[in-house]
Amino acid sequence: MRISCAVCVPVSVVTAAVLLALVPASMGLIEHHGSGTYNYPPNTTGADEDVKAWDTTKVNVLADGLIGRDLNVRGTSTVTVSGGLIGDDLFIEDDSTVNVSGGLISTDLYARDNSMVTVSGGTIGGDLSADHNSTVTVSGGSIGGDYLRALGSSTLTIIGSDFNFAYGDYFVGGPLDAQTLTGLLADGTAIDNTMWISSTATLTLAAPSAAVPEPATAALVLLGAGGLMCRRRAA
Image (tube, rainbow, N blue to C red; front, side, top):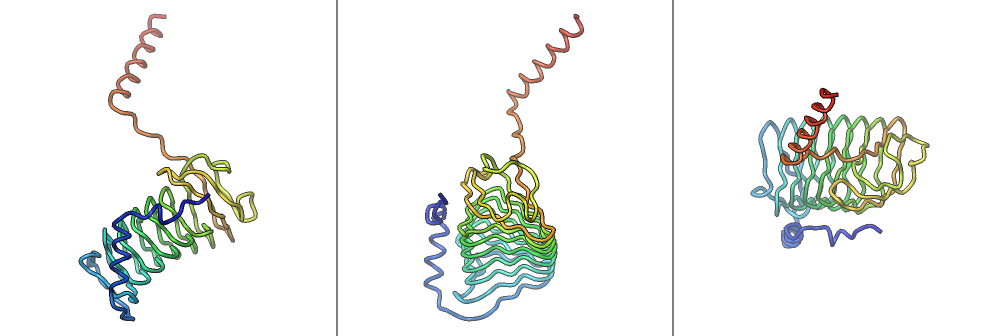
């Protein structure tokens, strides 16, 4: 059973949503060009305004940050979403890089055109799609829509455990195509979504990386290895 987004959304995101409802509607577009860095907040938008990041721009959506509608990322720009609210879709194109670790994307996340996306937390209210040579890695967060899609010649990697399918690569027409994947993402969040694969895309299920041992544990391992070597020499 999929976890309700209302359960997953942090208090700061709820606050951002309430604030957005109080912002007067002002249809429009905010464009960021060049190599500058733009933080939300203190930057903000109207309830019906889109934001576009172009030309190596950096945009950070922080706690209580508000983007009224879509956030479009293009032209090798870099975006970090660690909190706040994107009122509609997050589009990533043109060799851009996006990291999502928190916050709420109200509807869909769509990556294409050689973009690279990492999702380790936060909430995506709709679907997640990787398309046209994009590389998307999902290790955490809640995806409230029905589908995760690997399209075109993209690579979609899902990192977690207790999946109902084996670790490995899956392709169009294979056993995972158009099937429901359940299990736990690496951050412990449940996943229960239908997987779609098309064309030459690859969908990979991977285990979380092995944890680095604590210093005391590492010392015991080394001590044990030293004792084994001594026994071998004595023999």
